[in-house]
Image 1: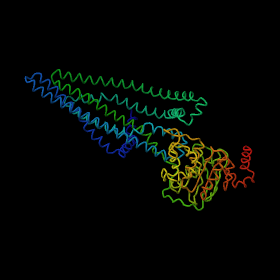
Image 2: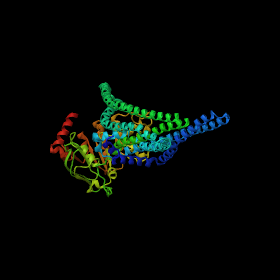
Image 3: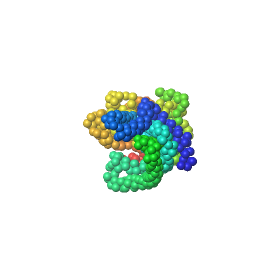
Image 4: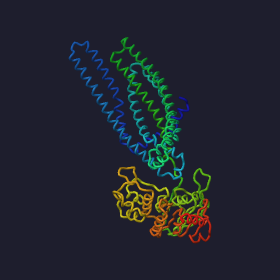
Length: 606
């Protein structure tokens, strides 16, 4: 083992990872960890008691063979055999009890770590979800990390247990000969070197494989999920995707098996060296028995003590190697948990103005997505007055959806400021600001829950069967859809769960609209919420929506110019800038971008 590897094992980062893992166990399963520790002490001493009793049995048998009173000798032997049996029963009982304790502790820790991963996944900025490195980090964190903190504690527990056994055996062997105790070290060191060397190689390989495994998982998702099922069959994509999946898995399998093959031969060599040492010691003990220095009982006891000591010592070193391996893989978990949001939170947050008086002000706002050289928004300045209805129009990629994301602080602008009643957005608590918005994005979510819960997610403060749910469904037109379902509002939507009912995209969209209507907020943002509806249905919903949104500041995006006519003001985005703004009549008179887009659509419908 080279100096660099020793340095790595003892590095602060490795030790800190183990410390943090132990802290996780303490937080969620402290009492079970304590119980585990108590079991360790008893289990560690059991082998010594068992060995000594077996020695007494053998010596009693040897002595009894020459004693005249065979009955008395057999009684002594029987008592000792019963004692050996009792020790074995107790040992098995302790093993079973320890197994239950460790399993319970493991389940608690695994669930706790998954909760932490889920909390971090929700906490990190939207930016991370547009970065492939984040998905690699998430994949590595989910893959093995949930069970690693438990493994750390189990390794420490096993190490302590084996240390107790080891010291007991060493104490016994030293009474026989110092060379036996020294041989223990020679017997286990080759295996330790192999374990340490390949632990690091396995970690490097797993980190390298993360991208390949994610791609393979993606093809698995394409082949087994419902989202692509129609096109998969229509375009006969199954064979191609299966081939891609198999190719990736073959590459992953080849690399992994190659490493395990090398490890197998290395372990074979280490085990061969260990066997040579063990049987050399056996020969040494047998020779001392033959020349009369020890009894046959001593022969059995010392040989088994050496074997058990060698097993305990090897287990101690294996636990150390396991802790090293755990620290490497825990690094994946803690790297993920240490991700920090870039949307900053205020140290001393200001209360959000309710109701808002002056409106929202965009001041020279510019923005580009991470790792992209192009500005999506460039020097945007405008104002939204309280209760005003604004329509955003423009070609795809003009920055409409990005502007909505900035309003909700899913991102922060690179320059400029967004203010609410003159107060910068970043002065408010993030949750307080976002609570002021009802939003439907064009890629709205479809939750495989009941129809009632799908709507209630817009305002989780209300109960499952609150009258507000039905009212919101009536306003969005979703009530007509829900009435046809077999269990009404208690029907599960989608086909993921038993008795679920699938909806059309337009019907899902009405459910999403109801979810926005039920939220008690000052601002409503609609990013093409009716794109799956026909023009007539969209116009009808927007007309109804205008009545429902009376007194609320509203921003909606629509590619249908006819729907934009109901807005108080229309903002035309072109290449990340506001090129025009005004009412429908004003923009038509300007005969600019908006007018050309409107006429093109009008010709299409004619």
